[in-house]
Amino acid sequence: MTISTSADGVRNLAMTMKPDNVDGDLDRRLRVLLISTYELGHQPFGLASPATWLRDLGAEVTVVDTAVQDLPTVALRTAELIAIYLPMHTATRLAVPILEEIATLNPGAHVCCYGLYAPVNESFLRKLGARTVIGGEFEDRLCSLAKELAARPPVVTPALPLAQHGNVIDLPRLAFRAPDRSTLPSLSTYAYLDTGDGRRKVVGYTEATRGCKHLCRHCPIVPVYNGQFRVVQRDVVLEDVRRQVRAGAEHITFGDPDFLNGPAHGMAIVRALHEEFPQISYDCTIKIEHLVAQRRLIPELRDTGCLFVTSAVESVDPQILDRFDKRHTLAEFVDAVGLFREVGLTMNPTFVTFTPWTTPDGYLELLRVLAELDLVDNVPPIQYAIRLLIPRSSRLLELEDVRHIIKPFDEERLYYPWDNLDARMDQLYDDVMAAVMRAQGEKVSRRESYARVWDIASTLVHSHPQPLPAGLDRNAPGRPAPSMSEPWYCCAEPTADQFRPSV
Image 1 (tube, helix red, strand yellow):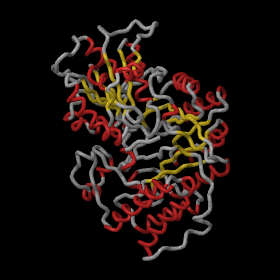
Image 2 (image 1 turned 90 degrees about the horizontal axis):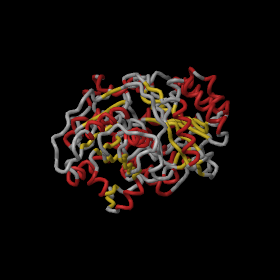
Image 3 (image 1 turned 45 degrees about the horizontal axis):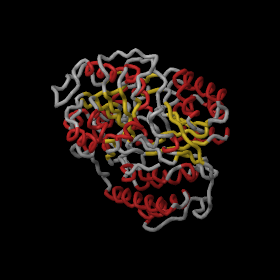
Image 4 (image 1 turned 120 degrees about the vertical axis):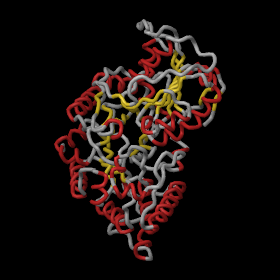
């Protein structure tokens, strides 16, 4: 983390003028600092949206994304409300030194942590100084907190903390507002799209829904939303896209946990998007279960400009899929890949390759399936080294064999450590991660990366490297699939690279 002492930096980051058409509901001008630490290379919706709500109240709001910006000392020292956005595990870990810095530089500030990983880590965050913790829908709660703080005199010395009102997790149905992204870093600062043919596109990011109607045991959304999802109104999503296109976006990522949780809502948005901006492509995330059930929509995804779909396949082992409660089978995964190939749409599957139940043969089988389905070019090599994350409140803790295998909760790393019952698998993880990181540094092809992992895994199973699956040539250039420059992670223990965000 870098601290910037430039006052000019604060002026450039902050929108200090109250909108002309807003009367404001605060008793006085409240200084608010909103911070995001990491969101997979995206310009954070979770900063832009609450910034709009708070500015409409009349607050003076500074927004900082420390993934691409220095943290300005002036704003840190003078803010009365500091709210840190925690949408994922890595973001929470990266927030720790910031919380410690706040305690030193501005102990009188009211610190709020909000987002998916805030309620899961509530006790830990409160130890670090968080006075309010908000999970679920956060915009209205942040506004209520701002009103309460503005009703008090400005803080000069540490004040008696406000008591938190309401539940930590709140899921109201909000009337959203088009996010104000004007004071966030430019879109070109963030992760870009590699189209697969040597071109790059500037990427915008928005959300059409939050939460998820599914209850996958390993998913961090479930402890907060518990099978519910909330819709961001169509006109808000489209206006958000318009503003980002005007700011240079050539492609839009929909960050919904599952774009087809509400298929009518999602499809209406992409139809309107394509009609207004036929040159703009997009990507989204969809479960295998939905792709199979809504197969009639796949051609329309392609026709409305979808460039690729990310799908959290997680495993090809039926035992692991059952433990995760994924509600799809290997056969359905194969079916979905076939559907995509028929219509000429790209699927980028993701996996949790190392779990307590992964065996050497099972790991090698996953590699074999990817080769048979001709998906090696679609899978970022880091996916071969994804290790299951078990945070507090995970539904995996419902399983007796998980409770038996986990170690005591690690408060520094914010998850339950575990070892595979077969010690060779933990060594395999270390070896694969090292090989993937080395291949990444050497900028080798995805096929060469796969081949190196295959050599390691097949040696473990057969005592010496086996020939690559039929038809796979490690020296062939392959057919690179469209993908983001920042790899997509889900439900995984963070890698070292995630603590050095780079776009």
